[in-house]
Amino acid sequence: MPLVNHTLHTTGRVGLLASYLVASMLLLSPLAASAETEEAAEEATTAKSEYVRFHPDFVVNLKPSEPHFVMVTVQDMSPGMDGILAAKHQMLAICRRILMVLSEQTPESISSVEGKQKLMEDALASIQELMIAETGVPSINAVFFTDFAAQ
Image (cartoon, rainbow, N blue to C red):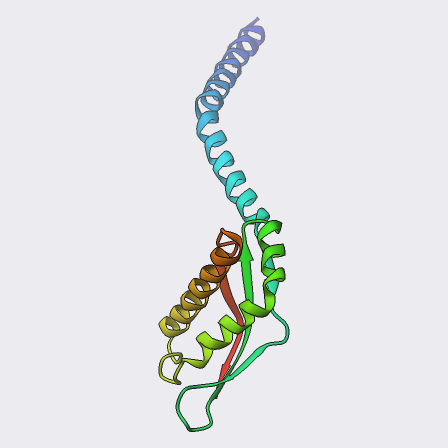
């Protein structure tokens, strides 16, 4: 008989432990669901972004009279395919804008990380100005330099 009592007693502990685990999972599941929802929303936002790469790379003389130049590979990001299609439709005008922004630079203005970041921001502002004038919406929400060489 002591064996039966021991089995019942152990089963009772396991049942109690299982109840605690189930209760904990039920209480914590809204937090887990919330975190999963946020991660899913972030992935969905990233997944919706579309990119367009400009060909060929931009090679531009820098401002001083000395022979300095910069070679840049540029990609634009849009929140959706409509923005990419609009950008492709305006490709020549966008390339001109990027060339103008690049040609205004000096070796000193692009030598630091902050200078390159400002250059991307200036290029984005110029592209968005064009896109708003042509389509009524900015279409492009980021400009990236995926290759950058200055000499």
